[in-house]
Length: 183
Image (cartoon, rainbow, N blue to C red; front, side, top):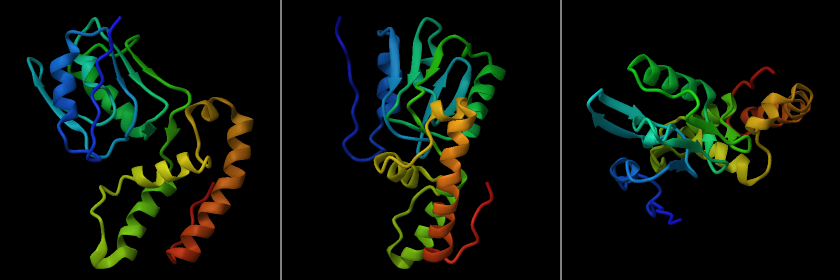
């Protein structure tokens, strides 16, 4: 079995989504292995124009399985909105889209830190989308993030949040002079 891999080497905006859309009809599985809901890609097909940020482009091919892998950071609200929008427009998502339980979850503090960090940089701001993807990856790499699997285990999630919320609040208050978040 052969594997076709599309890898971007420029941290986004290389046209990966378009290439994957062109290749998707020839494969069995379309997977996102990394990234978050920052830039996204636009797909135009018989159903119209779609802007996807998390769901793989293969979702438009009814016989394809689509995966969101453990290398991704996922904003659950954005993912659910994207799924709902696709379903409303006639795209079958159920039993075709699978999310790794090891993917990291984008939390409210990630967005706030992203925006505040840009403000702190002033004229040296890097132009983030403000969606919190960068700070979520910092937590992923630092092994201090919430994963999809953690959400399914109430006790584990509670213990994790008991540590993370005060920690992130200290960062927000001391580094960014911003009020923290409640648990």
